Image 1: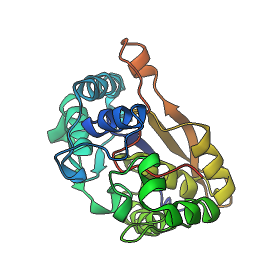
Image 2: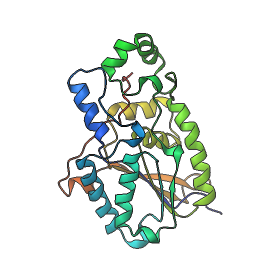
Image 3: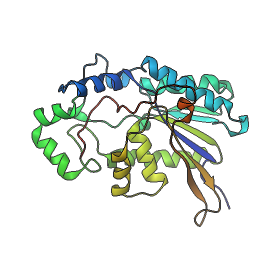
Length: 254
């Protein structure tokens, strides 16, 4: 039987960014806005984010060569680009089969809620805040932004690319928290309640790994099976602090 899926897929959230730091400071101060000069797409890694990426890079480099990623897809946002570059430096970038910057892996777009804290959203857009509480983040689309369903829709086309171009390959995807969760929704065939419960249970740590391997005995034709979930041992083993800060655009919890 022809295998359509990659042999293995690693989902990595970028290292801690300057935006994560700014958001934490704004939330701690009960501020309404997150103070950053750059566009969200241009926000770099923090110093700790670089260290986290280096710790994870060492873990990938320690894998046997035949078990390392040979394809890298990553978001065009600077924090993801920098994370991917650090990982590839340790994995012998020239030996990679393919490296693709894919705009479909970009952060969820928050529209007019961009750079507002939870307190700021409730103050500036109380009706939207109440609507989001009622509808829930899975279906709620802020003006100019995306719902989780919108993100899932663009990721479905990424799945088409994975099965068409990277069958049997070992694919590393470097992106953002919502992207990791929405891929989980697709790969594990979850429903709204299950993925939102996982999201509510805790953020996806920076530079954590969630991975899947193809199992030919699973299902009728074989499928991807979860192997690692929010795996942070490479950071813990090197004494690198683990952080779970969200990306810059803030949105209130349901």
